Structure formats: structure tokens, C-alpha cells
Length: 329
Image 1 (tube, rainbow, N blue to C red):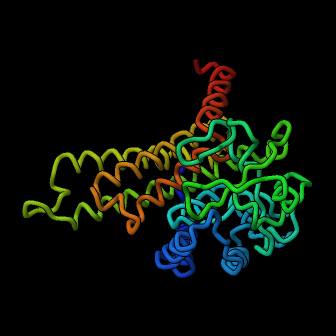
Image 2: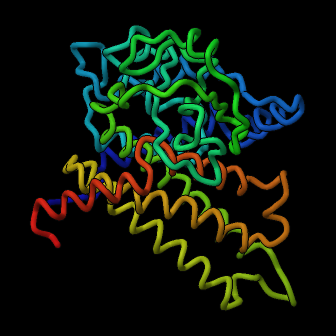
Image 3: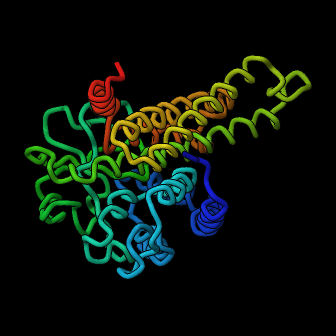
């Protein structure tokens, strides 16, 4: 089985990267972050114009059949597209809206924003007040959503019963709402949601690797680039290993769509996204901890992504069950 992207898939990835560079380059990202910080707001307003552009480009309808107005591609292509979105730190409930294409009117075209009860139990340092604590579940971008995936619940009704929660990621507003009784709303979408989130995490891990290597080449100390120091070399090498392991697992899971492999891919991608962002901070030194650097944005998004669709604990349970069922342990 060949897990390498075809030429057409590589062209797709390059095209999406070019589109996102035009629509959501660093200047747009930083302007959005600074706008949130300027008003000390708990939520950022989603750019509906950008959302419609994504819809027109086929981002959400990528896997719908052409007869239904979609692009007619598969899960492997979706993973490549979401990898680029993670690399660019594209905000919004991308996974939920993509999964809702064909089920929620307007989702495929980008005229509707769809969120989900996608934050798993346990939370983490990037998701303060995450599910697992008293008070309910967290939903991202609820204030901007037109629908909740797999649920007949009106987002406006959830807003009335929920409360805003300060999110570590400035571009991912969170609301704590009454938790669904059994999580059945997103159960049919859980595997694909976890894989697409893993692709977002993979894109972020690859981007922070790029940032670290570039900085190590450009930053000089004692008359030479810091990339010549053994400690920095080891950090960058470790980042590369994490990213490539995650890439292999995510691409393979996209081909097989096996729940156990998806769980393993999510584990590796979360580890790569968080670990690479942390190591990138170390390569940057004190500069990496400043608001002006982009590294902290990747770390915060990675923390949040690790709590979405399938947490480490949930993925480990799925993987363990799959190994037991197949005699792998």
C-alpha cells in the first residue's frame, strides 16, 4: 500500500497553501489576534467573508460527490487540505462545518457556520474549564454558529444557557454549555473529526519546525548561527522526528480510515503539535515568549486541538481496544 501523495494530491496541497497565503497570511492572522487583544474580548468574530471564500473553493464540500455539488475527492485529500489550514492557523470550526457538508444547509457553500460538541473529556492546559469539570461541556465558536452538528439544538438557545469561557487560543472563543446526555450527537463523526483535527495538528507541527530551523539559521550568538550549537541541533532534530512520525501516521490513517489507526494518528499529531511548539519556543529563546512571535499561537492552538474530538485518554482507549481485538497485545 502506497502512502505517498500522488502528484495530483501534491498539487492540491500547493494550491491550498497558495490560496491561504493570499487570504489568510501572517498579516491577517496578527491583525485578528491584535484586534481581540485590543478589546480584551473573550471571543473573536469569525470572518464570514473568508468562510464563504473557503466554501467557494470547495474546502467544506471537498468530499461531497460532484452530483451533489461537491468536489468528489476523498479523506486523503481532505487531510492534505486540513494540514495546510493547521499550518496557517486558520481559525473557525473547520472540522464541524466540513463534516456537516451535505447535512446542514449552507455548510458546503460556506454560508453557514457549524460547530459541535467536539471537546473531549479531561481538557488540558490550553482548555481552561474543559469538559470533565463541573458545569458542562465546552463548545467553540458558539456565538458565530448557525447550527450544532448532529443536533437539533439552536445555538442561540445554548448561548442563553451557557457562559463564555476565556480560551487560551485568542481566535477560538469558548462557551460552557449544558453537556449532552451521552455525547451521541457527534458519535458518528468522531473518527473523521479526530483525523481531520490530527491533520490540523500536523500542519502546526510542521510549521513550528520550519520556524525553528529558520530562526536557528538566522539568529547569531558568539559570531555564528545558533543552529551550529549542539543543543539547538538536538531540539530541531527531535522536532523533525515528531513531525515525520505524525505525518506518516496521519497519512496512513487517511488511506485506511481504520479507527485504531486514526486514534494512533491523533495521539502522535497532538504530541508533535504541542512538543514542537514548546521546542520552537526554546530555539527562539526569550523572543519566543513575546506576544509578537507567532510561536505561542501555535502552542495555544495545539493545546486546544489536543482536547478536541478525541483526547489522549480517549484515543488510548480506542487504540488499546483495537489492539486487543486484533491480537496485537
